[in-house]
Length: 231
Image (cartoon, rainbow, N blue to C red; front, top):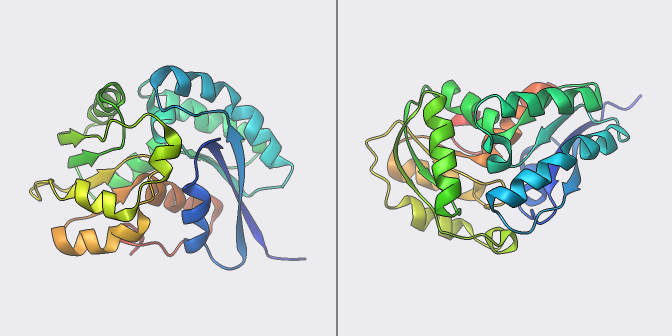
């Protein structure tokens, strides 16, 4: 019998980054399979409506017999504060009868793994979502030294950003923090992590990096990603 492993991701319908970034870092005998929830605008109301489809999407991935599944949306998994993320993981786990992770908790686990408490956050979001993200992270015990967004609500436009945009955004970070967190699973970031860590001298955690790292751990699959989180 084949030892081929399958990882599932539940993503917003307008997300174009997860399926670009995850396969670059998983082993050759591991495939990534996506199921999509309707979302075009990254606003609190749209994200709230989108989450209603999460279990249905996970159930569809169970037809592919995935080994684990991720709810790959940062603000979508922290929208209702602490506890909602764990409920998502439990519901998706039941849907596939296997392990599940949600990006917000994956980021928390990644920062904990790195021993980071004082963090700077950069996002593509509007101010309302930045405020919710700050509240979530502070409730989880982190000191958010700064948070800044690009004010973009069109998720297709977020997916069209480039690693150079991440580099420019992170350039304003005061390196007197334990780590930088770059939020949003539709923000193409992973190729910028190594150079940014070299420049800043501190870990850089991204939503996609944390999620694929955590999904790999849940599935028992080794992920060779960029940056200190993976080494």
